Image (tube, rainbow, N blue to C red; front, side, top):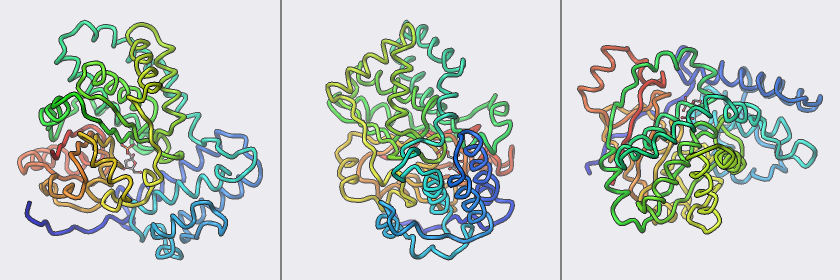
Length: 392
Ligand SMILES: O=P(O)(O)OC[C@@]1(O)O[C@H](CO)[C@@H](O)[C@@H]1O
């Protein structure tokens, strides 16, 4: 694979750009929503006020001296970024640090009554409990009678398009669902993914999860299906060690999703019970590695995680943020080969993502030209297009 020239790292400093709008509008909206969702006391309200002022007009401040993960954040660049505007450091860093500070503000890490209370839980629960979820689960009854190939495709696409279920995105993407009437795959390596998964039936699938609720449920269904059909022997689900980007899945969200399935009727319940049994006998494991919430690309992953992915038959990386971290959060020309920007990854890797931020690689020139002619640059962020990309 020839070396590719690097591309500029994305910052949030350009008014009118998508990254700028996330820092200037989405983050304040998230603070508002979290504040309204809980009966917090004066300490939390004051801390949320301070975070709002800091992230919109102030500068990056270090974590408190006694923060349990201060050393980790120092290793991840905190000292270099301290004192700078949130808009002038890498956007990926700024966003991750925002969620870390938000948890600090609501007392998530502080011993006391609010410790461990997920500030995004009401939003995640509402989605899981919504009637739309019942409809999606009921559709599994029909799927059970379909030919195997059809089931494969339906469950893969369910997991892929489930990635639109991203609560942070919905805060700033009014109308995205309506516009999604004509979704399109801009890259489709699903045959390559199928042959990786079907190769021996003895392998391990690592699935790097993204959102809870209506994305995690179809991810789990896909895992259950691959285990049941003997396409893989084992699956490892990587979730976040703490709440992140509003709806990102944690272990608690996996439990909620599994309980939602086992409590459903028909085929959905059968999937749920199979997954429950797979957890019990170790065919399905959950990991919550600290690096899953790191403000850095996967190229910088630590050795233990690298070894884990290296041992997998394939790692499936879900969602927009994970894609940014996989290929690097940079202004790549869209035709930059996906295989080149993921060459650092320690084993075969597949990205399943709906497009919700500017980063894109691996398009052919004709596809890029058609998208831009039809939509300008909106296709990059609207969430109405998706991709399946594989590097074997
Ligand atoms: O990773 P996900 O859930 O698919 O999407 C995350 C997202 O909504 O948040 C980021 C901006 O805050 C973008 O990467 C994307 O728009």
